[in-house]
Image (tube, rainbow, N blue to C red; front, side):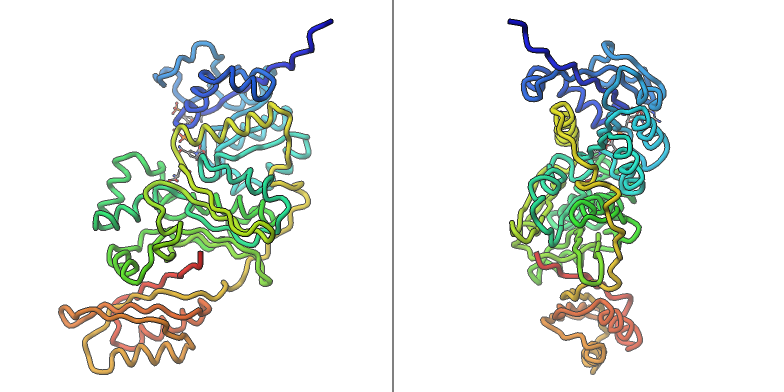
Amino acid sequence: MSEPLRPAPLRLGIAGLGTVGIGVLKILRKEAAMLTARTGRDITVTAICARNRGKDRGVPLDGYAWEDDPVTLATRDDVDVFVELMGGSDGPAKAATEAALNAGKDVVTANKAMLAVHGQALAEQAEGAGRVIRFEAAVAGGIPVVKALTEGLAGNNVTRILGVMNGTCNYILTRMQSAGLPYDIVFQEASDLGYLEADPNLDVGGIDAGHKLALLASIAFGTRVAFDDMELEGIGRITIDDIRAAEDMGYKIKLLGVSKMTDRGLEQRMAPCLVPATSPLGQLEGGTNMVVLEGDAVGQIVLRGAGAGEGPTASAVLGDICDIARGFRLPVFGQPADSLRDATPAVSTTPAPYYVRLTLQDKPGALAKVASVLAEAEVSIHRMRQYDHTGGRAPVLIVTHKTPRKALDKALQGMAATGVVEGEPVALRIEAV
Ligand code: NAP
Ligand code: HSE
């Protein structure tokens, strides 16, 4: 009897040998037998590419062909899957991804910036050519949330996605809280620890997390990626006073992403919010990520894990590579790209309770003026706390009942005109989780 035919090896070309790329190479080298057993075929690396050929990367690279140009790597005849681990929304990452698809290769990438900006066009190109683009590592690092949404929850109408998807911001906020340190000091600490992206605004400006949320929203709601429509606010204005005050009212401050489909359109926000301190999101410490998925049939699912780093991110890349090796193929965003709808951005967000911190002058009637401005804007106070005066002024915290953001903005404008509120009040949404 003849031996059954062994499938040909799956041959990878890897562009980018930084944190993620080297993590992927290490797993491929160490776990080759396990990966073959699981997928039924060998997974090999044909060629690699980075900027600096001479750099010691702590892994022997002499068994792989070297290319200086990612496009040349991506289009080699002996590469089946182009693994893009360089980063950047445009430039070589996009050029090489397009070239790989043109040349009939599948693509695995960890690049949320590229997909948040060019995801629709790349998905159309891939599907037109019968190829796949897989991007598990692009969203929440090691957490298999793309798989959870596209596969495990395929039978649900997703009602809401929320989550903490930037570990650096969560590290900064929780470290400010635990050490009682101001933002600037902790930002510097995060920088010294190497946590920040080369452009730190991608992290603290909420952009990196916004990219991730936009990708999940596309899968969840069957809509084209709409990062530009997202309401985006970073953590740079959060002070230690806000963190302490929120804690005193029973909340934690998180850079929280929320996406839901409403009858007014698609709501997408990535902004600092208050969540109950006792909730799973409230208890999330350090650089960990958490994504909460809600579906009409399943209810609520909470996924928690490392959102970054060599091992967790490489784990996600390997999951995608193994799927391709097994012959498992899906449209990029879970349904054919040409069937994704344009998302109408929601013009106003769902009413929510808000936390407002303001500095009030110590004058008779000052609090009454603030209360009257809130009443005129039809914003109802749920809880209020005033602290001791120092130097003729006192911090006041207000938690409102559910109110539309528009009404709150009217009240905030009114406060500025009272003459008894100093500086700009801080207003943060309180998210039900
Ligand atoms: P990284 O450590 O900065 O590595 C980037 C790699 O790309 C380097 O090896 C660099 O070469 C190479 N590269 C850059 N420009 C190139 C070019 N023009 N031609 C050839 N090679 C080029 O980045 P990383 O942290 O591994 O991130 C890679 C991707 O994964 C990004 O899209 C990132 O957003 C995503 N991601 C990262 C993490 C994480 O924890 N790090 C988590 C999730 C997703 P040299 O080494 O020679 O400079
Ligand atoms: N800069 C990201 C974070 C890691 O801090 O979570 C890469 O997605």
